[in-house]
Length: 240
Image (cartoon, rainbow, N blue to C red; front, side, top):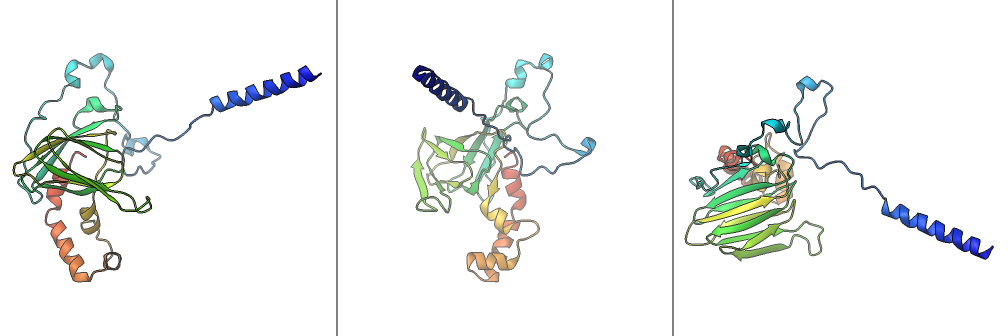
């Protein structure tokens, strides 16, 4: 009788352990755009979270080749920098592969202003020049809004965690070049100042004056500044 009880206990324990090994990890796939409003008519809809796939029979080696990444970006703009993305839109072979790459050129004093990527972490590699680069942690992180920044030289790599505000500034005496790799085929881009002061329609004055603890004249001056190169900004990061 005792052996039978022990055997039953062992069987129950084995069954419980087996259940822990087969726990399902169910979750929706991560979004690859800011939003996706549902529609009932498929003819008026867009295909998102990727692109329609090319018939494998029609795929050639040329589909997996991208040329032109050695082209120097035009830095003749207020920020004196230029970011060019190679993602699923510009290089369809990346579709579903979860990666994007960028080339960023910086004139002396050029800046890639504070921004964030809502859908991807970023790994930046300096190819030429010297950059001051960093990111700021979230408000509720221990010691909230802490800055992590370093001076980067040729061959150095720095990582920006997903969704955190980060930046780069060329502090060297020569132009700089960096490559960035993202863990999404559409990492997204939110440039902080443009989002706050250049939104369409504008954010209500009281929100900004109270939020930044300044008067309305300061807010209007900032709005005018960012409206003046909104077109440049959309061109600068058009492929993010």
